Image (cartoon, rainbow, N blue to C red; front, side, top):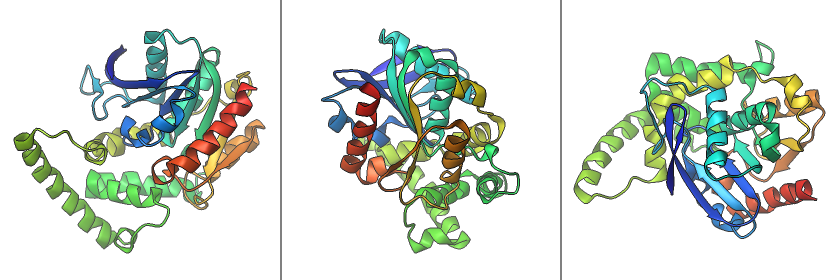
Length: 295
């Protein structure tokens, strides 16, 4: 584990294994811990690099209100590669991490060996009245009107393959939000006594304000992918979707992006968080695609 300086941020970075570099960019909540099950499965073949995205968990911004735009987060990956003296790397990004991977591809293709953009929520490339845009607008509206934890509960339900019944209603999500706020407060007191480190989920819940108030608007509405640069990148890459993600707001944008740019859209097992739910199946599929890029 290292702390690496980037412009406007100090990044918590984890590195293990040997072989070609593979950077895994986390999605909403921005924590390296989401990949903790797959890193050991990949580190026999790759030098695996994971990190907490700027402002999330253990990566602090040098100014509290510093930028979290997609372009700044892409530059964070370049800073990590530079620190480790890595000329080129494979990159896998999921959700908002996939959008960051696409920005890397459009701006820094010369630093990349291949890219997989797994379920990027590029609702901005969809029609204004699309269900995908509406779903993400609903999340940001909930954050403004009901608070970030209420919006985070809805966000969590959206990313689950089969959400429990309590997650499927506004009342249930409000109960979850209230219980989460209480749980975080109690947990903070207990950790102060026991000195135990917070879990990945606890850290990610602590990132909810940043995600809902700043990252989602930046990634889903302000950012515009450079389609011409992506077409001209000269690096092998693909979009990707989960076999259980049909109908979710991050599914069709990946298909539309791939069709517009003439690249493949690969299918992974599971849904949006397959790397946590089925790490071995995820790793097998990931290696299959990366081996194709290495040949």
